[in-house]
Length: 325
Image (cartoon, rainbow, N blue to C red; front, side, top):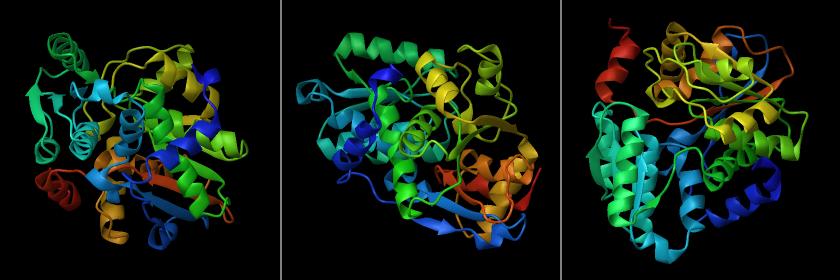
């Protein structure tokens, strides 16, 4: 599939989605920089995107490239959170029905977000398989159009626009791009886009040690399924790697690193208290990688970290910030 995609597709997507997606701020994290070795650290704030996360980029590209006749039947998606809100938002913008399938333990803030955009929310079990089976049932019964969260090339290419946007904001002067990695659609799209513009820019994907999906997939050199542990980075709790994401990450990401729970929690606190940025745990794994000395932060380097979202339950956020056990 990847050989059929071109970096020009990312630039076309960027133009296509511009009326539905915000150009998010890129800020220099000067307080965080003091903790490291002299590198410039820049944060790409997708938590300030419409719907509060980067997911809108891929979803808008997918839905804007889908035939109107298909969309009018309604759309469905399986998601525990940010993808759900993005699909709900775009459905509202385009005037079509959205039915979102969520796990029974989905974060309250993300359920409320999807419903707030007018979507119907249906609950199905706790696993990705449960949600996928329910989506298939809805598609068979109603003819809905599926907006998949990470397997669809249009979604992956749309996500790649965040990398191009950040590179433009840095005037092309970037040494390393760091992205959180769950199912791998952002890592796939962002690395493909960056390498297509400048192969010398390093791309690092970061995942929780409790769900080392692509760490293990790359070791085995194949897409696989891993056992999931418990992680506060709920948006990165994906146990199965799909072939398209595995191949794109294998071919374009320079390294995948895994970080522990304490580092993710500390990263969230640092971002919130030092940089005054509200970020969900999944969005903070890139900074956790810096805390674990897994990124070269030597003087002169310009590092961009994508802060992927800010949709977090207030009670959980307060607990993490205050380090209440």
